[in-house]
Image (cartoon, rainbow, N blue to C red; front, top):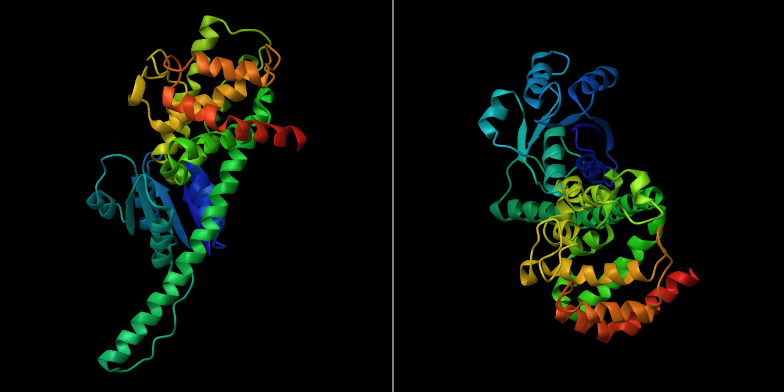
Length: 354
């Protein structure tokens, strides 16, 4: 099966692509209506997932155009929207289905599978009349079959999501040479701290992804600022600080980061005393995952080489973190840091030995 995905958001395209490729669907991508027209002409897709809001040709316009053309009118089209467009508007444009962002990738997969005529196939249903109990047995067999498929999908999709997250983290490290292995190391620190502070939060996969992708917004910061071998000017510092909001914007359409993960990306530079950024949140108004991550991030920043200074000792980092309890950091998180500090130090040794 071949799916054509038309959306100007590369993060959302990556999410949809990994979802469908995990079940062996061939995905082609276009970032606008003009590129999409060429792909439809060159190789007719079996289904189209189309965003409404794009530069140039809108999703509504392209949907009407494809449905008015005899060569493409029968291609199933799923419209995606993050604005106030209604399902009635989508039907008027000729769409076969309509979904709002954020959406479940598995739900989108199910919708496309239904419209395209069966991606997996279902068990054979006998023709003719059956007794009521026989019909119930057939339905039960179908349900078991679909549940088995869903379990398999979830394993594959989880693996695909993890690979996508790792690829994004690697892209950051390629751009920002001062943070080599920083993302993976600080994620390990944060997970250990979270176990000590909030065992329930550590089970939230979105938080773990947020720990890894906390600095992804730096992809949008110029290299000469990221790699500057001395302290930044005031203007450069203002630009650098935008990476938290840039990161949130980049990842806002990624379903598996909604909630705790996205909060970590936006708020990991807030301070307990309210002097942080971007929103100057104070105390417990700062999301817990971000409060925990702030300590892990500072630990790694202090003990790692930076373009403008060499790494400081582990003892110096511990002293600084304890000193900032109630100022920069949540005192409860600092207390947990002291308790698990030997485990964190062992994690640091593992990365040195690797």
